Amino acid sequence: MSDLLRQALWYTVIGMGITFLSLGALAVGMYVLTALPTGKKKAEEPPTEVAAPQADDRYLAAAAAVSVALAQAQVIRPTARATSNPWSAYVRSYHLAQRSQHMQPRLRSR
Image (tube, rainbow, N blue to C red):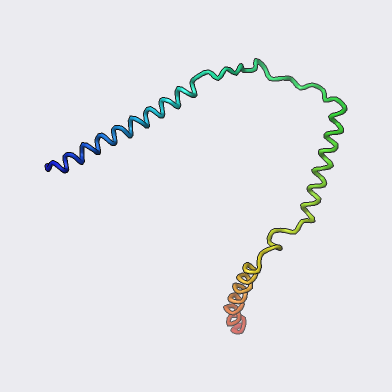
């Protein structure tokens, strides 16, 4: 083997070794950081449901009214297809014209 090839192989081995060692150090560091305690205490048991006060009924009614109003507004709002740009309309009409030209010979032969 020539000296130049041997030197290139050593550089490759050293470079790949450093790369894999740094990837391993990164993986170990991530594991250590996720294993450290965060200091937050876990709740012993989830809170139980309590009867909602009557003031919440008004909020629920208001939320229902807002959701109905939004649903009605979406029905009135025009669709995105109706507000397309002129270029899309041109391309659509071009394709329809091409289709009708291809269909005319078939219609005449019947």
